[in-house]
Amino acid sequence: MRNTKGVCGKGYKDRETKVNTEGGKLDPAYRAWSNMLNRCYGDKERYLGYIDVEVCKEWLQYENFKDWFYSNDWESKDLDKDIIGNGKLYSPETCCFVTRKVNNFIMKSTKGLPFGSYQGARKLPYVAMVRNPLTGIREELGSFENSEAAHKVWLKRKGEIAQDLAETVEDKRVAKALRDKFTQKT
Picture 1 (cartoon, rainbow, N blue to C red):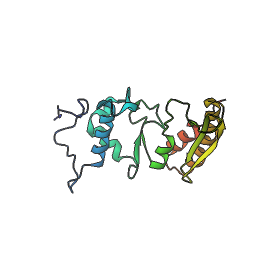
Picture 2: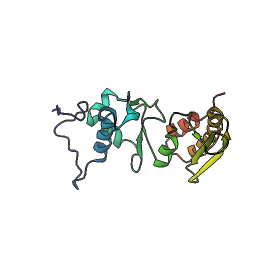
Picture 3: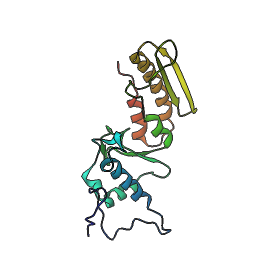
Picture 4: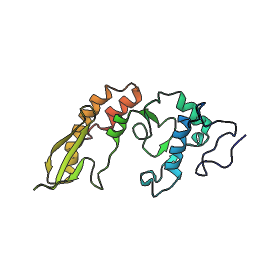
């Protein structure tokens, strides 16, 4: 029997499906499912990066998501829709689980500038920087007269790191996506 109340007015589950573990904690699959729905359909001011992001029809039903969740290597990993997919859809075809190290590597925040380009405090106004997840070191790649030049250097170094990071990933889809995503387009 379907639960008509739902999560964010979108997600639903059968009434008989339990969402707590035997120890009384929230089931990890349910927590991931409800968090995903909240990011997509919850408070838009809180989740600005999720405007126009949707959950596939199949995953609106918790039991379908739960089956997929437990058939994958999920422990100590984050649910990701960006590395394999285009970042706009949560679905079995576009999602995977990645380590926090990989997830942080693919995340980008540049305040309106091309990726990897930051306003510098030196004579030249733009700095290219990348955090290397394999060493834990933030690498400053130089200062540039424009953000496009900084982005180009960042993209080259990000691609090099992605190749090395891909070697540490077990999921072949994620390794391929890492290799492809940061390949410099010429």
